[in-house]
Length: 446
Image (cartoon, rainbow, N blue to C red; front, side, top):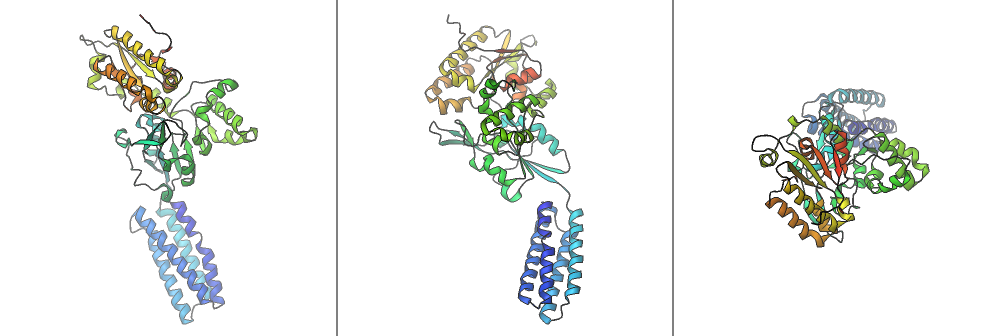
């Protein structure tokens, strides 16, 4: 805001020159217009300062005195007694006074806005927000944005808003009460890169990255996922993950922050392959490999940082109070879409095996947050089958069903990982957790 007000104030000297020049030429009409414009600018700046800093600032007092000067200059001009030299000195003196007051009255703060959409993906921005919120020179604003499920034809279905599901220590601002265009924050952080290109969901079109870049000086994209590290020289591997990279968020963001320096090189190679070698320097400057907040957060967490729900405890503890081993079972979207019907059979077989060993091991099933929405949108004929599987898992009390927004709690509690390839695998490796990947075609038919 300080910069925006300064941009208005800096226009005054040019108007002052016009006023003095018009007085010398006895051009009262032009001088009157400029005096009026200067007064309008002073009032607008003063009103904005009152709204944000409260009344009684020295800057507003200086602006009021400046407006009185403009009034007296107009009176003298009408009476034919205005002295251009005297007016020039007075205007210059008041202008310098306003600038000095503005410099010290309004603190040099940055407005940084975070636009998460799913509460379960907040960990991809959380540590960045915490650092910003602890900086007295930054006003960090968290604005959860709505998103839609999509029908098979791509049209919008149900709208979701998860503002109430964020951690209690995160102050939430309603997306309906914050005007991005009017506030024009210094920076905006996003974690959804897809805009209108996702087949399953879409954030509200008002928050597509193509639009957001117009409302800020710096649009920053941090992926909500982490990927398995690959060799940037392996072009086949780079091409294999290009769907995660060739997205509007990467294209329109001013800065992209990824999980490692190696992944930065992968992003660069992918975008150069797509857009041409002449863009290499641009993407080298734009993409940073400074690390994923998801990995940063999970590495810092211990069992003391999580609260275990009461309904989970009966699955975790034996009658003698000892703990069972906890296996986090993760089912991903990519594996389901590759072998949909087979994947559902595999899930049922996994449940059967763990049911036989409930006394020793607890299964903590955490399907991807968009699993149900993906089936409804892209495999609608299997929606009832999946709903039945979930119902059986719950009613037969086979284990813990975790569809909460808090993924980190499951990772901290679990002893090992079993399931599909996903960003969870990378997080498990980061904290040294054993990982076993499932093969949907390995099923005990008996």
